[in-house]
Amino acid sequence: MSSVLQHPFNEPPAPGARREVAPGVHWLYFPLPFALDHINLWLIEDGDGWTLVDTGFGSPGTRDVWRAAFDDALEGRPIRRILVTHYHPDHVGQAAWLADTFQAPVWMTGGEWALTRRLHQASDDEVGEGFRRFFGRHGLPGDALETLARRGNSYRRVMSALPPSPTLIAGGDRLEIGGDAWQVHIGRGHAPEHACLYRERDRLLISGDQVLPRISSNLTVRAHEPDDDPVTDFVDSLRALRAALPEDTLVLPAHGLPFRGLHPRIDDLCAHHDEQLDAARAACGERPLTAFDLLPVLFKRELDSHQLMFAMGESIAHLNCLHATGRVRREERDGILYHVA
Ligand SMILES: [Zn+2]
Image (cartoon, rainbow, N blue to C red; front, side, top):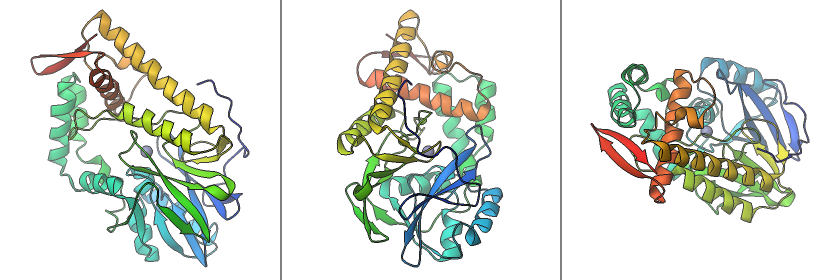
């Protein structure tokens, strides 16, 4: 991660307050209860109210911040439309509650809506069984596997509720918000059909989690699509975004500070995954490895059980990419998948 990014704003607004970052576009900052300790939401002036992009984590603490924001950041004006970039609970978590509070429609892509609904509706047993089968096949040992499986459907617990059926949006759509045209660009890999919003008139990109300034978005493989290759999807969709948008675009990410430097940042993210793929392949050349065996190669820090789930997904993602492109082959022993370079 070597690129030098320019950050026109040095610090975020206080939780519940707002800061204007471009004409009619305001930054909201909400705390998150994780190592990733905040999310940025974006409020766009839209007639007598607001269009909101992303909604915050589905926890009571987030609702408290929101209640303070209704009079403060929103100045008592209504949210007219809720646009959700992707299915993760820090983005879609309060969509149902806000839609109900303001009688506002939710707008999402079909791919994000389908996964939101699928994950929300799964039973605890179904989710637990999926973990046992899928992560077990990728070498996660029994104790850690049981800890994860016993969490059941943790997704549903951090959602206010399932949002109402959304108005569907798709790549290439031009949305009119507050008299301006915003173009939908699709990112993949971190989420199946992640919506990014671009305002051409002043080269402004609301990037969600697709392009972040400091960290690389988690890429994961899910039990119901075990051969998915999100690394290729992520890199390909980033390259398409780079080709479509100008170098001096102001990027408004969901985590971290707004920045200029979209092209070098995308180059760094793609290079990071190339390095991870090379490291994984080299390790598989020394001895056959499971996705679990590969964790210390890809992650140089201690992982708690929450991070372990993301790390396993990311490890499987890189092995699936190497397998799909013929750089490793798989050997199955006692129901466990090993990778050989
Ligand atoms: Zn996300």
